[in-house]
Image (tube, rainbow, N blue to C red; front, side):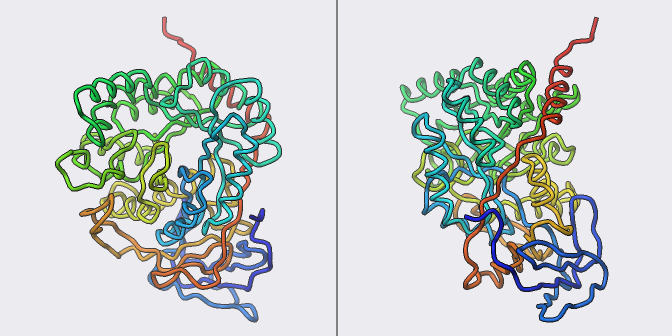
Length: 457
């Protein structure tokens, strides 16, 4: 996978549509070319010689979506499924690799080999198994040599508070941040064992073993630990009122914390965990489980207020380990459009922010990704805002989705059009996520420490 898209592209001029970014909506043209970048943005651009003109009349022109959390790992077949992401307007995914052993460098090579089969551009979050000296040393190498600036820490997989303190502190020192999957591991394990003893398994056990309090406590603890170490932190996926409130309180204190929600948690009801229901088992075995409408409304409120910054698919291939859902690459942005924008909760600009720009900013790949401006990658989706469709199968069965990716451009080349992939579209590129500047890391650390002060008498 290349650092960019490599060869020179033909010129492509998108005109007649409304360009929507995270800041504004404007009637301007967009010229793409070079080695896959945006060359110019402005009203009534001249048509250069040998340029293909794309008529975007009646459509919205938006940055390609950035999915901040998938769990494909070193699975070639899983990456082959990412054409579905293109169909939904997503052009970049940030994937998580869970090493089978303590060797992070070997896990990086395995992941890189598999990711060559991706139809989208891909960046990487590396999961950390422990806080040993060897792991800390390999973290440094991944940040400086491989373009990895985020490390995944899983409470459910057994990382202790001591591990989290050491890893968040070390990540901050090398210009990276930690993403903490926050669930109270001991409580979940205890409840799961009790349920097993009672003969309750599958999706029903997933729901009953992770009540909302378990998540809220763990999110608060994760944010507190990161504050003690002085490191910036990203938590998620969040699925409850309590976790949303904890995030809001931390941000009000000035702590540098981001969070994300999975698209299905915004619309899928806890009824999928019903053992008497028709839902396929793989769809409902996930942590966190799906919640009732009260929690879903809080998640939408978190997105509207900026407390929760971004929406992920949480996709993982069927039959693989770890948490996540085996559906949803194509539906992520369509969920947010219909149930967020068309429902009056979000603006079109906020839609771009939560599905693209916020993730690009959080992981330091903005404005290469998540933007429509000269120099940015020419990852663009032409979006029909009025389209609607009710899903008939899978996790989203019976749920209506809105908007449609009419044409998707990745790196200046049309890769999806007329509801099908384009012939000769090729594969995506690896997206290095640069380390945060040392001074920025110092400011993040200072802000985190200050946010932990109790100034009340």
